[in-house]
Amino acid sequence: MDAPASSTNYERLKRLVPLPLRNLVRRVPRVATAPCRVLPDFLVIGVQKGGTTSLYRYLIEHPQVAAAQRKEVRYFDRNANHSLWWYRAHFPLQPALRCRCPQLTFEASPGYLFDPASPARVQRVLPEAKLIALLRHPVDRLYAQFQMAVRRGRQSGTLEAQTLLWDSIDMPGSRWTPQIKVRKAVDAFCDWLPRSTYGPQLAHWFQHFPREQLLVLNSEQFFADPQATLDGVTDFLGLDRHRWPSFEIHHKGHYAPMKPESRRRLLDFFREPNEELYDLIGRRFAWEE
Image (tube, rainbow, N blue to C red):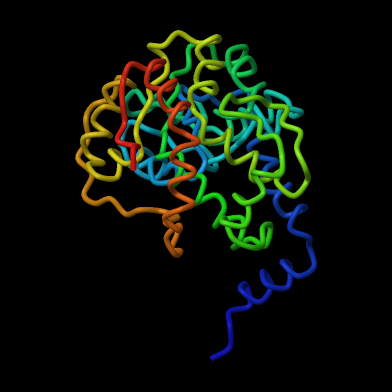
């Protein structure tokens, strides 16, 4: 049977009009109504490969949460050159938030936690916003990021080959800094190491926000008992508790386990930074193995 004419015309239009232009046309109504749109009430700020997609998907199912146009707006790091008008365009219209019951809206950009400029930018625009950081076992998070880079063609070889390069360079140590200058061969790896060093990242956010505005979650506990974790999140946000019918894990990676010797070496590397994190937040996580 022949395809409907409207479907054929749409496919022809997709071929003729470049994707950036199509996206621009779709954004025009939202940008035009930006002054009538709200800014987010809370942000999920990290971490990469920590389960933020699953947390985002669960939260937008809550009847008192209104979804943003997309999960990662990244206004406070990658898109900081855009206007606040542009940022508002990603969120719901204000009347829509007030027609039934009080609702909150948010975005989840896991790069915010690591970006050194984001805390001050968020504080200027959203000083009252609540913040959520979802922290994963630092070795598992690093390995997941490495595997993602391999899948996307941005990294070749093995993690073991990367760790062998440690002996030939001066490693930056456990303390996080936005300026890490090492040999090009290990630039990516030395970026992943501080991304898994959470204490200095959180300390930078605590310089701009009171601690009661930032909720620190543990990824392993989140996936082991998502309902209990989400109860804590809704309490933190001032929302009614909600019963989720199911908890699908989103963007779950599938890859071979890390070799034991590499895991031991990374565990040793992160032992001191983990202790610094525990001292900072007053809690311990089961990250010894």
